Length: 310
Length: 299
Image (tube, rainbow over all chains, first blue to last red; front, side, top):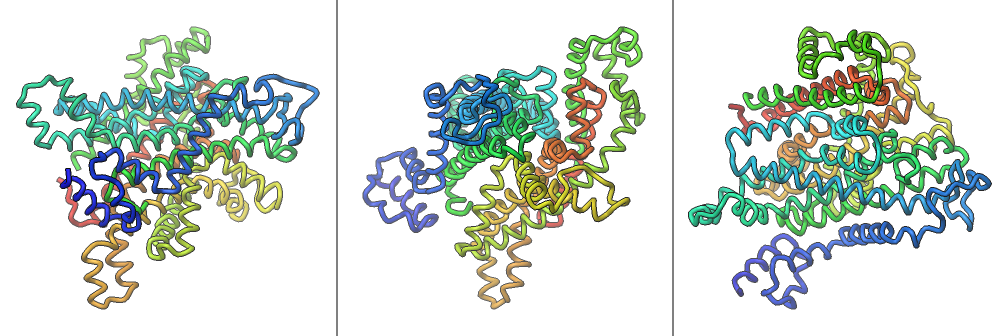
């Protein structure tokens, strides 16, 4: 136990001089997780990112209570209002309250991000794990397939798939999920190939455990940290891509409030009501910023080599 | 090298496969007359269509557009140069600026210029490109009237107008790349600066310029080149959005319209061509590794 702490202390003083002051207070028996949490919260930007994301999640959950109006309720007497106390961010071309739509847009963005990333993580990581574990022919096929998917810009893949399936929440999730698969698959595969070189895998194998158990209990948990970084940053990228799809008109279908389509609607009235497209854009920026900063923080916490650089 | 060729080959059938599913739904949703189907070969089975199409592509025939009823290859030949032109400009712009900013940041680490550029780069990777385009149009076209809001003129007919039209979309396309390259360069230069051989160079009394240019940058650029390869794909993806915002008749716009019109011949050809361009540029990037890092040899 003492030894473990000693090692950590050394690595810490090497890589991050300024944070080592309060180290003596923390007893060495705290595990790896505690250490990661400490580094993560030691970074201001990462904490800001976390706060932004938590605020967004809260907004999304509490949307019905936070929004002053129904997001899809049209009011033809209140068309294209400038920001005022009754409509804080003004109203759009059919008299819907912009603030309420921005709030509900957080819901859509969050659902798409979580859904698409969840889907790509499950499929991509399973494929990557299988490819790395079985190797040989299967590895070649799966990696060539991801190479092929990588060759086409992700937005283009999503655009084509979304146009085949049609718009709507579920289809956007599928389209973006497929687009994100190669990233997850490659990361998993690369990690798994490295991890398999370790002696504990050999030890586990010599104990005669099953393939599935080996993959899930021994390889996957050890590959988890870098996957977490990819996933966090991927959430931001997905929100950007969803906004792009909705902006083009193949994403979330019209009556539903999505930030991307709100920007393209508001674009038509940019001279008179710039706030209509500015507000959702700022929201997208904030949220993606939040995810990126969280990703950076995680990278710092999980990858000691890069600590304090990026 | 063998690996690269391997990568080149299967890249294409899959992109076709994606467009094939596009084809299938085109048959279902757009209710076209059977004759028309016959004319475009749609009454054949999917696999037959696929074989026909591959055969055509190998002969340089990309098929007929249903909507424009012209050869897809002529449409593409019209639109592709515009996107390539913008993409190349954006690519050069972002590589130069991204590396420059990254190096400045790393050398002046902790100074105000580092702080400013890092913050801007962090914002740069989060701004949606289309929204940034709208922002630019709002400020520079509608408020200051410096640049036209969009459109495209060939640089050969009116170079001045072309430059004024192109500057905003190119900036828009390259913003994300500039920002991510800056971040990557900064990290990688800082990593190299800590290496022993740089300390040796300092202790030999070499000038800062020699150390920065010869010892640091050349070594630091190796991971950056990897990211540069990814940028090509991102710039192409971004051009779909940016061309829509700035109303530029390039490939991106052609593809978006084709998707809405279920003109799958164009979609197939477009996706194929973009994939080929991306793969080719990645090939160039991979080859250039050898120049940056002579330790890498291809088997």
